[in-house]
Structures are given as structure tokens and as C-alpha cells.
Length: 220
Image (cartoon, rainbow, N blue to C red; front, side, top):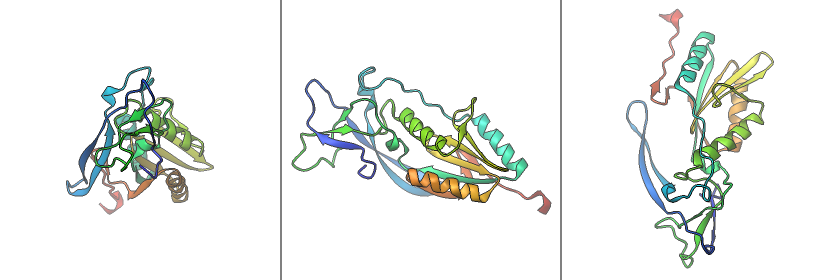
């Protein structure tokens, strides 16, 4: 939270009501069902938000499964490099357009300032507009690097550099990169990592519930 500058502690303005929050604990597992890590996430109680006051637009595009299948077919047919990255606390990167106040998280209220509230500067998990604000932030960042989104699926991006090209698939906080050139792939990874807190997972082997195998038919 501190790294992303998510909020400022201030006195609650008159006539304003703060949004509540809670801690959510999850266990992340890999393709084989083994535990990778335990996660604790602070989530806003978005159900208390009022439309037109605390939020306006909430729609955020999500990559279609059919689009992923098409990209996977291209990876196989053209023998593209396929890598995966994970955005850590993705929603905390989104900027808020509205003034939203939240209670201090349980167990982490600042000593001596328990009466203050958090004025949110970034979107936080649980807010109605969180997903949309993250998408807007990512879209602006990646298109400024030469990527163009797809008319049919706005979460599929393509960048062409001479004879080299790279596809980028965004699925909430998971990113797939399919490229004809390792140099372009590394360059893209470095750019994304400079702008967001990323985990480079290397060659993709498990994506949105799909396990990926690469087989060299010449060796069969």
C-alpha cells in the first residue's frame, strides 16, 4: 500500500460517509495443486458505495477465451516464444476520479490518529470501479509503447517492429506474451516491469486454468 501511495490519512469531511474494508486471505496454488504462497488482501466494502457519488462507470473489458485459443494456435503454428507475467496488486495501480474515503484497516490504524480516515488516491480491490481504473492505466501505459489493441478484443494487443512482432494478452492481472523474437520479448518485459510491480514467470505452462505443453513433432 505504501509503495503504491494508495491513500492519505485525513479528517473525514462533513456529510461524507467512509467505505468500510476487510482483510481477505487466500491460498494460491500452481497447476499441480501445490501451494505457491499465502495472500492477504485488503478489500473495500464496495457494496456501500453510492452510484453517481462514489463511482460512475464500472465496465472493464476482459479477454475472451476464444481469443486466447486463436493466439495459442498462432503460437503453435508459427513456433512463437510464449511467456507469462503476473501483475502484483494490479488494481492498486489505477487512479481514482472520485473522492472516496475509507476506514483505516483493522489492526493497522495509525496510533494516535485512529479518528482519521483514508482518502483513497488509487483504486483498491472491492471498489466498484477498481477493475475499470486498472484497465485504463494499463491500456494507456502499453499503447504508449507502440502496442495497438484489437477492435474485437480490447485486451489483445499487437506490436510490430520491422519483421518482428509480439502479441500481448491481458487477463485481469495475468499477462501472456507471444513473440517471434526473444529480443523484442525481453524489451517488452523490461518496459512493463519498469511501470508495474511484476513477477516474471518465464515460459508459460499454466494460464487461466489451462495447462500448456509444447511438443516437438520432429522428436515424436
